[in-house]
Length: 417
Ligand code: 7TS
Image (tube, rainbow, N blue to C red; front, side, top):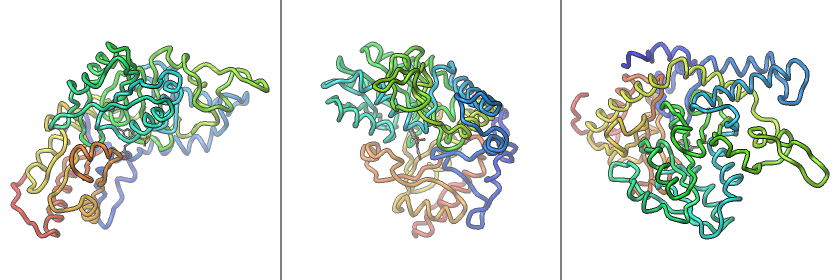
C-alpha cells in the first residue's frame, strides 16, 4: 500500500481492532459512521480524569488552570487541522450541532420571508433539517442542486438554483453515501457572486482529506471529532474571521456572558460566546490527542492510502456479479466511502450476513433520504475506510458478499480480483 502509511503498524495503536466478532477478526468498514479510537485518545480521556479534572475558564486553582490550558490547546489543534486560527473555532457536541448553531445564531437574524437557502440533493439530514426548521421560522424557501449520473454535484444545476434571494449555500464537502467530493472553491465563488454565504459540512472531509477551510472561500465549516479518531460528543464549527463577533449566541447560560444584570446581559467575545455551560472538557482534550495522531500520520498520507483502498474496492465490487455501485468511479473525485446494492438482497440482510464473518458495514438510508429517493433505492450498503484499513479487508468483504450470494441462491461467476 501507500509508502507513506503503514496501516499494519497503525492498527496496533487501536485496541479494538484486535478483537474478534462472531468468531472472526473484526473487519471494521463503517468508518463514515464513526471511527475507532487509538490508545492515545483513550489514554487522554483517562489522563484528564485521573490528573486534571476541574471546570475550565473559571477557577484560579492549579487544576482549573491546567484543565483550561489543555482545553484551549485542543482548540488550537482543531484550528490547525483546517488551516485556521483558534479564535475562530467553537466547540460543539457534533457537526449536527455546529450546523444548528449557524441556522439559529446566523440564520435567524439574516434570513427572512422569501429568501432562499440552497442545498444539494446529497446532503446528510444534519444539513437539511436545520434549514427546514429555519425556513419554517422565517418563511424562507429551500432549493436543491442536483447531481450528475455518476453522483457528482451538478454545477449547472447549482448555478440555476442560486438566485438574487439566495442567502446561504450549504453543501457537504464529501458525500457520506457517494463519496463525491464537492468542488467547494467553485461553489463558494458562485455563492459569493450572488452575495450569499457558504456553509461547508466537513463531517466527512476533515477526517480524510487535507483541508484549508479559509482557502475554500466558505463562511462556516462544521465537523465532528468522533469521525476522526476522537471521542463522541465533540464537534467544531469554524467561521470566517470576524463573523462570530457579528452573531448573537445560540444558547444562553454560564461561560458565554460578559455581564449579567437582572433584566439583560452582554455577551462574551467568541468563541466563548457560543460555548454556554460546562463543555465536554475531557472529550475536547482527547480530540486534541486524535488531531495529534492524524498530524503524526499526515493528512496527505491518509488521503493517498484511502484512495488506494477505494480504487481497490471499486474494482473488486464492480467485478462482483449483481453489485451496483453508487458514486463516481474516478477516485480523484471522491473519498473512501463506497455504497453499493446487491441485486436481489436487501441491504440489511447483506449487512447481517457479512457481520457473521466479522465484517462491519452499514446498511440503510445513511441519513440521506432525499438522495435515496433521487437514486431510486430505499437503502444501500456502504463500506467506508480510514487509515487503519488494509487491502486484505476489502478481499474479506468481497468473499463475504459471495457468501451472501450463495445464501440467496444466485451464485454467479466472478472474475478473480
Ligand atoms: N454530515 C455528514 C456528511 C455526515 O456524514 C454526518 C454523519 C453528519 C453530518 C452528522 O454528524 P454527527 O457527528 O453530527 O452525527 N454521518 C453518519 C453516517 O454516514 N453514518 O452514521 C453517521
